[in-house]
Image (cartoon, rainbow, N blue to C red; front, side):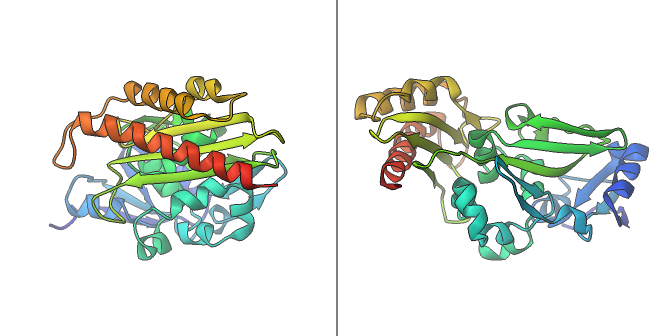
Length: 292
C-alpha cells in the first residue's frame, strides 16, 4: 500500500515546530528517522494530514555528559549513541538495550526520541527508560515540562505528550556507585524483531558484595514496559541469593498483563518474563561484583 495524501513541512527550528503544533497539533505527525512512522503510514495505520520533518534541526542532536545526568537530544541517531564509549561508561544499560534494537541499518536512521515517542510496549528503549527513571523533556510554545518515564508511557503507542508538545530531549540518570552492573536480555522470533519478552536490570553493591541499589523491569508483557521499584527494594542488603531473586522475579511476572497472539500465549509470556528477570538480575549483580 501507499500512504494517504499529506502535506509535508520541513521545520527549521524547535520554535517553528512548536508553533506548527500549537496551530494544528491533532493533525500533525513529527518525523525524524521514520523507522516506525513510515511503515505505519504505508499500511495506512497512521494517516496524518501534515507531516513535519524535524530531521534537520541541529539543536535536537546532541549528547551532553553532566555530573549526575546525561542529556540526549531527541533526534540523536541510535547508532551514534551505541558507538559513544563515554556515554556507555556513564549509562551502560543504554548501549546494552540499543544492541537489541532492529539492525544496524535501522539504528543508522532511527532516533532515540522517535523510539520513545512511538512507545511500542515491546521496544527496548522505553524499557531502559523505565528501569533507569529517565525523564522526557516536552517542549511547547508555553515552555518545557519534565515527565518521568513512569508517567510518560500511557499505553500501546500512547504517551503523555499533548498534541501541542514535542519531545525535545531525554535526561538519563547516572548512577554514582563505583561497583555497579547492568544487563539487558530479550527473546524474539529473530534478532531484530520486537521482543516477545525483554528484561533489564541495574544493580550496585558495596565492598562486601551486598546490594545497595537495584532497579529492574520487563517489556513485552503488557500495554507498557514496567519497572518494579517495590520489588527491587527486597534485594537491598542481600547478595542476591537464588531464593530472593526467584521470588522477586516471580512476583514481577505476576504483575504483567500480557495478551495472546500468534507468537506467544499469555501464560508463556509470564513464564518467560520470570526466567528473563532472574537472568538479568544475576548478570547485573555478577558484573557489579566484578567492577572494582
